[in-house]
Image 1: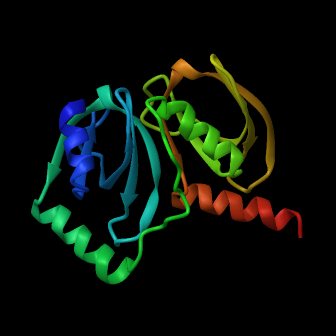
Image 2: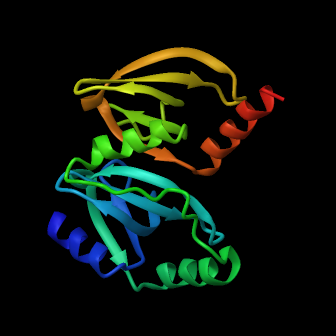
Amino acid sequence: MYHILKEVYSKKKFISVFLEEDLDTFYVGYIRGISQNHIVFNAISTRGYNDGYYLLKVDDIVKISFEGQYEIKIYKLMENVGKSTDNSFEFKFSEDLFNDFFTYVSQNSFVVSLSLCDSDTFNITGKVQCIDSEVIELNQLDEYGNNDGTTIVRLDSITKAVVNSGNEINISFLEDLKGK
């Protein structure tokens, strides 16, 4: 699948990505970065708006679709309703896309949500405090933007991650309001 995804990335195709965990749920948008093991995927909502940047494992992707009616519909909505894609998540990546992603998230104080151990939900939301070769430390935030302690997670347990989706933007906004 890696070689197909790399070709799709190089051609900047607008695609649907289906993951192993649930073939009824999928993401529509663009691949923004790729390495042998991971992609950064810019998801677009059903209304045509930016819906976050997902770090996904290449091995978890079981199907992609492009140029179908659904992809064309979302693309048209994005071009005409959403008007612009969010360029706030621009970073240079290397073959170590996983660490590049989390380093960038940490340096820019983005709120990130993590899915652990092949869960189909995001289990932890917070801000990255530090990352090393084995673990990532997060200042965990609840849905109201309140500090909910420190969480340390093994890197190899992270199935996927997302920044700048509606949930993370809301939590970040609520956290920022607390300082006012």
